[in-house]
Length: 420
Ligand code: AMP
Ligand code: GLY
Image (cartoon, rainbow, N blue to C red; front, side, top):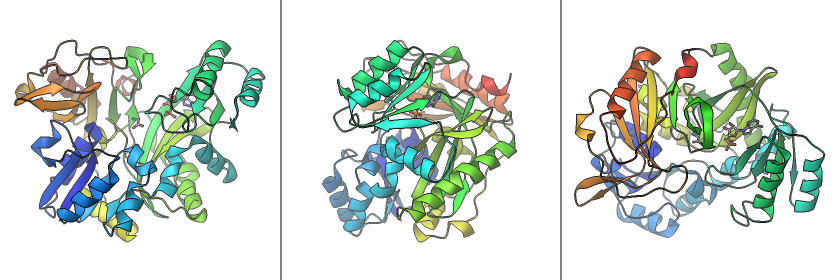
């Protein structure tokens, strides 16, 4: 088969890496890809929202499957576009990807089907939203409705912060007119977070191994939020009964609800969960693999990923064997100086050939005159694998130290929650 992956981050590198092991694939492309993906797939200079260019390329190259990894093209209907041209695609259609694309849709769905989530109100006008907010107390959470590159959520510790966030979203339209046209104002929950991803073919849900992300930029969860500074899997301190509770109370009922709503979800459904004293609750749904969750999940997958994608598209996921390794995986993100604020690009990266034990997934790199250089905020994800979290951490950090570029930084406490 000839397969095209859409996207350019560490997640896409991990997907391409997993697919590159499939004996069924004769040729892999990635659009647009990055400096690391180029070693495994032919990178094509077409970007994620160039739908016509993508379908034309897929026709010309006789592509058998297009795997759409990122949220933007999914929400904008790339899968629908490809299907309308007779091209097979993996990922939810726009009417199902809306579970990530609109927080108001997601919250209403969960409320209507009694699926546990934070209490909330939603608004499509500033004045009533402000009046409601002023009747509440901090801490409180303000969320832009639409996609906002992971930055649309403010966990406000004070009412001033909350009012400023609401104004930025609805009046300042800092995330754009459409993403900020509606907001969700939601109850603040406390507890450990867990990323629970699942393969879903409509009504069959097959959980992946659970993982945990680290969103704030600095150690001990200090500093502004990022796209994710590191992940690990398994979660030895979280009992299997909690994962089962999440499957039975949240993930399966959500897949069933989407079928009932005439929006069957086919693809990867990502539940962002919080383990509160009152049980597991939903923080968000994503319609795709997580980044950097994928960088610890796929290295633990023993089954051919292509077989799973095809089973989902054929509606035979229930019969598809899916095996996971017992190994632990820890991914440390090495970021550009200044990230998540403004950062330089084009810094030469050295030491990649010194890496000993880890998988190096490129997130923001490019090749300039044969030299790998930085090209994004999150630059590399270094995944160590070992018999347990301690060994996997040691390997990931030892290799993160073998790689250099000016001003590189990473968190030093990835996976420590599992070891306390
Ligand atoms: P999201 O973009 O929806 O994943 O939210 C980003 C982060 O904000 C989450 O990973 C949580 O750490 C935090 N968050 C979102 N909603 C809540 C909530 N209701 N209570 C506490 N923290 C939240
Ligand atoms: N790691 C968070 C996300 O992919 O949304």
